[in-house]
Amino acid sequence: MSFFLQFYTFHWCCTCFLHIRVAYGCGRPTFPPSVNRVVGGDDVRPHSWPWQVSLQYRGSSGSYHHTCGGTLISNTWVLTAAHCISSSNTYRVYLGKHNLQASNEAGSMAIAPAKIVVHENWDSARIRNDIALIKLQTPVAASNTIMPSCLPQSGAVLGHNTPCYVTGWGRLWTGGPIADILQQARLPVVSYSVCSQPDWWGTLVTNSMVCAGGDGQLASCNGDSGGPLNCQNSQGIWEVHGIVSFGSSLGCNYPKKPSVFTRVSAYSSWISNVSSDTRHTHSVATSGHDSNICFSLSNR
Image 1 (cartoon, rainbow, N blue to C red):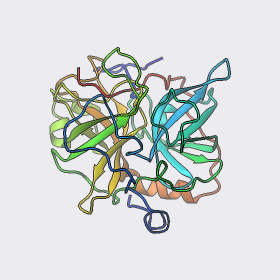
Image 2: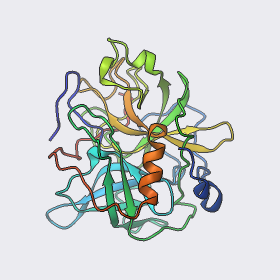
Image 3: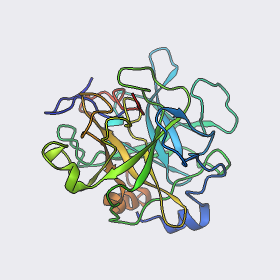
């Protein structure tokens, strides 16, 4: 079930660690994404976003179902949204997927979490600190289909209109079907000074968030929660600058209500501390929110 705030009802379901960038490699897919045109709800080039994962929960029948996205940031850690995690669910992380309906897809694998760490100050009522880390039970090897994204520099803030891409398997339009094939949409960044204006998101957004889109045409929607906002740096390397967090109840692609993301660079220290601290145990949100209410790409 969703929680309610004044303007919306739905959740949208670092500095690059030196050892990730150098020893493991990140942000340079074998099959570069097609980003020479605006896309929205279009099938992506297969495996062009190899850090994209599908977070899936086990249903009552024992089968698993997509609930949120996530981003591989090393060979053992996946970044997602806090609101995607519920203590009542059993999860698996599916990596290297293109088509969620394809069984035994070449280059893909499902791995159970060894532990899940939700930000200790996650506030579901105000949607603050919407970030979580999942440690994989077994490390993954880099391949053509599975590769980590790079993390941005700590504190980095993208300028207004910086072109970025949101990816996910969420709804193809407001109220529409969930996508089978991974989708992408080009969303220009909306600066905090614009996004926090009263006729945009006002005080619902903070400077620890990133807004992108808002033209009423392209957006993330239900099912994309936890997935990445992908932005390319000056060296051509892809970095995950945002985690899909929330959007408007008026529609996924409502004017002046851009998709809102947790700003990854605001949590560089937290990510570093969690990923290097072996004392963290399985810690999940218990507020009863429903991670199935997330958000997808829409151009309708």
